[in-house]
Amino acid sequence: MKDLIIVGAGPGGLSASVYAKRAGLDALTLEAQPISGGQVLNTYSVDNYLGLPEIGGFELGNKFREHADDLGCPIEESEVKDIRKTEKGFEVISKKETYETKAVILALGAEHSKLNIPGEEELAGMGVSYCATCDGAFFKGRAVAVVGGGDVAVEDAIYLARTCSKVYLIHRRGELRAARMLQEQLLNLSNVEVIWNTVVDEILGEDQVEALSISNIKDKTSSKLPVDGIFIAVGMNPQNELLKCAGVEMDDKGFAKAGDDCVTSVPGIFAVGDIRTKRVRQIVTAVADGANGVYSVESYLGNLTV
Ligand code: NDP
Image (cartoon, rainbow, N blue to C red; front, side, top):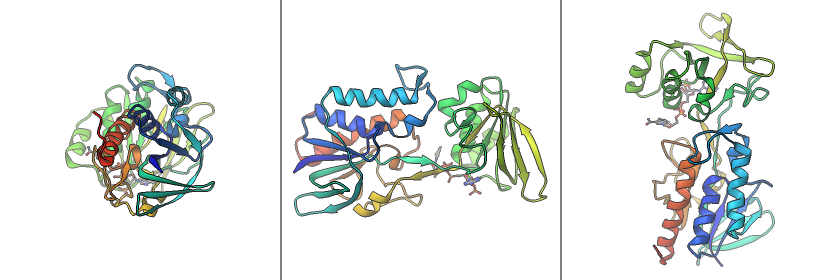
């Protein structure tokens, strides 16, 4: 019987591994992928993680894993398929074996929703981005487009307008779903232009984004919009299968309902990183969750050492 099983070895899960080790818990981290690091691994460059400016995402993911390995945190490659409540705790059932544990941290992550259009995958990291705060600085003085009409898209457009020469916000409908205050802020910016009722059909460019092929869904006209970058902000997909298995309460978007303490609706199960309800989904907030989550686990196990 383990004290804790952590499912997922992205920044949130690995941070939890490190904190669990230092807290003296008998913890094991399970990761379905052969490489740890989660979404970070696919990020071209990270420039907002304190102390490690302009580091490659792959390198940062590896550093996180090395840190956990150096401390002797046990991490196994194992895909968890189910989680069941037992009398003494939980059974965590993977393809390989069944583990028994008193508590579980779910660090399952979430993926940025894609547009699934030609050019999106080919030019990812070469002008196609899903994170304005991560990549915006690379587009200083240039023209970019943001796709989406929610809070994230509008916040991204406002953020980018501070440094980019021109920001187009492309939205598929005639009204934004973002908060009214954000909309007002956006529409007051002189270098922002909202392109309504429009979808992006293709992202064009050889080795770098050069233009977008867009079409107006009302009048069915198509045109080419020259831009140097496109920020896609059309929501996130939580990887929530195990939340369902474990009976964890979710919000209407499928994220685990949990506050900064990472406590979920199921006693003994904690949610850290992008999988939980939160405002800012960034590496640094996932890492912070790892610490908060383990603190809550210690509290739950009744051996709070801090
Ligand atoms: P949302 O689901 O709120 O918005 C997604 C946007 O993307 C919508 O405007 C939607 O259009 C559009 N969209 C979805 N799919 C496509 C597609 N295939 N093609 C084109 N457009 C598409 O997600 P967000 O990531 O913006 O926000 C997530 C949550 O986080 C929300 O609850 C939000 O309120 C919250 N949040 C709050 C903040 C705050 O309080 N300041 C800051 C950031 C996020 P349509 O409108 O037509 O459906």
